[in-house]
Image 1 (cartoon, rainbow, N blue to C red):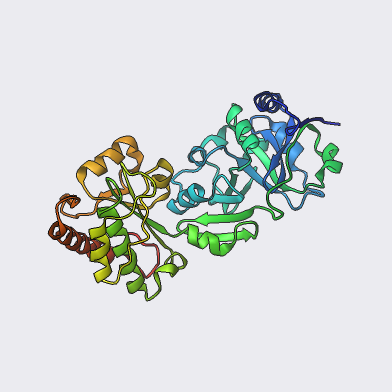
Image 2 (image 1 turned 180 degrees about the vertical axis):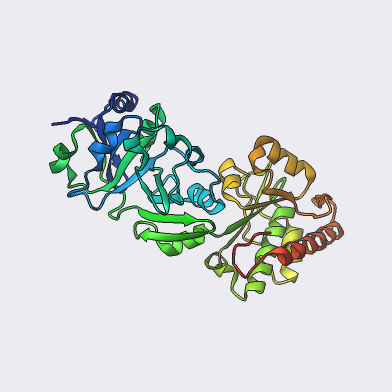
Length: 370
């Protein structure tokens, strides 16, 4: 019988992670908790791992994947990762979604694995990757020195069959959050297809695959909230839908500030001006720009060159996504404290730039690429 560790019995988590990682490094197969049941893990550098994991008799519900601690690891295995794959991994992971990509090619670090491991999780549509949300599994994946092969989506009834997989260690935790299996999605270019229905619905995936626009200023009470509200209104008008339905059409519009605090209302002058055009800004609450927010957005529009430089200097990999709202490389001046006339000029300027942005969007394929 395998050794068992119960995480709910006041065991030191750090020590349990060390034990689990040591078993994997030694070439053993271990069983860890997951939000959708349990999963079996073995290191790819041990040819025996795929053999011990590979028998699916009685395990037909399982999915063979390469488990990763975070989305960026996929770049080590796939060349030219599609933008849609990057987008879904950023928005779905960690979580109950398996993403497959690479069109069946043996790329990256997988070429260095033993031959027995190289085809793990690989099909004509590509290799399957999974980033578990369960914190203990995340910690183990981060602690090992090599890629991890996994069978995921294993029922809680699995303990009676542990011997069939020669498992050396079982880590038990609280019951899984979900009763369904992870959703399996294959991505090819800018198209995804659900291979197996699971926790995350196809409709939710369609929403997650949509375009997110973020407008950034300093305090998120004047310029960026006006841009957000006006652009949302323009998009809804162009699509012939309500603003509340934009997400179902594949669009999300946000705003934030580089020096903003949570919960501040929009400037009264901004609220008054937009109300005259039938745009309601009264419920706006400011929020600060965060790293997670930036990496999840497809299009980031800064009000000034200083705003853009601040973002790009911190996250140079986002340079292609961060643009000035003004196409002529001009700043949109801050109207705060300058009186209503300055707000009027600011609103008219932003509206002009937003119209140009709207005209650049290709609505025929609903990708929102500007």
